[in-house]
Image (cartoon, rainbow, N blue to C red):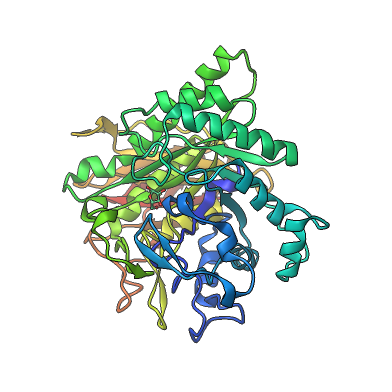
Amino acid sequence: MEPRLFGSFVEHMGRTVYSGVFEPGHPLADADGLRTDVLELTRELGVTLVRYPGGNFVSNYRWEDGVGPVEDRPARLDLAWRSLEDNSFGLNEFMAWAAKAGVEPMMALNLGTRGVAEALELVEYANYPGGTRLSELRRSHGVDKPHDVRLWCLGNELDGPWQMGHKTAGEYGRLAAETARALKRFDPNLSLVACGSSNSGMATFGSWEAEVLEATYDMVDYISLHAYYDPSDGDADSFLASAADMDHMIKSIAATADHVGAKLRSRKKIKLSFDEWNVWYQSRFKGESSLEWAAHPRLIEDVYDVTDAVVVGSLLITLLRNADRVGVACQAQLANVIAPIMTEPGGPAWRQTIFHPFALTARYARGEVLRVEPDSPLIETAKYGEVPAIWATATHDPETGEITLFAVNRDRHGALPLEIALPGDMRVAEHLELADDDPSARNTAADPERVVPRQGTGAALDGRRATLTLPPVSWTIVRFA
Ligand code: AHR
């Protein structure tokens, strides 16, 4: 399993950056203006990798605006989110934040309104040690050592007509291929992500990936997937089964990539980068055109409940179950914007419900993922047909011998028993669950600990057989040592 599965996303959007991770003048800001409360929560969340600076934002972004003396940086219009961007936070601030958070940076390039030359310039500025115009420019900005960013996205969601510089698959494939060719000439060890579809509902889903990969196969390492699940229509059974869709997407795009590999007679396997995923009450968002120009407005600050956290837990289970193919995954986003961490400007930071399954999975999913196929009753859903009520995975850490089980019960009407055959005599080291008599319970600034993981009860061991009960609409973790 790749540590890169526990990624997150910091976009210049709403309050992810400004008053999220960065707020000079906040009582808890450090000398760089970074909120230390958010840094601490990011470390607790267990995030390993963070994608930056967008998202839709990147497709009209000039990276040069965000480097050098802050007083010289231009204010710009961010067309993606109709926001005013003062550029007081840019590449070097992000890299300083990433080092303090202990995360690997994943940088996105603007292949919407820009092209090969600007991508190469950014990579030279970021990664070349010194002695050239752009590497010396970085050094003159106070960053002596290169950032050495290893992972680069070749644009963002360029199949989407909302994207600045939107392209056809043919146009994008060619640009991505030429950008990748140039970047690999600069450094053959860079890892590159080609854009897949913006979501599985796009008319070109599948054919976009095939055409893009035919153009880029030898030069890229990953193809991206994005998926957001929306609870707003009130179909709770389908929403709880969202992981069935994510699983299907992963299998479909892996098959598409392998089909292209077969056609090209290539033995190379393209990996998947699920670099945007989450629950998003998307139908509440009235669209970019409805926004008034403003500096870091409150955008899509969804407040998550217990059911949302169970779905997030099930999406993490799905990523683990596909860890042989998914090499990178980023929950979107980190702070305030559809995020596990919420903040108030000048005020506190707190954990949303969805924080907890992420943090516990990132902390305890270690070593290798075991193939787990539970026998489970089925639930009929309007969107995905029959799905198993229990969705689960387990990891085995060869260093400690620990086995960790992650399971959800998607049944809203009753608890379900779970019986586990263990490979040897083990004890229950920890048993936690996220569930509540009120599945719509949320955490807020006024009551930030309303929903926290609670001690699971009723786990019993009989030789190599463990039994436990999964409450209705619940996410459970059990560590066997
Ligand atoms: O995460 C919010 C937005 O969702 C991103 O900017 C975009 O890539 C996606 O459509």
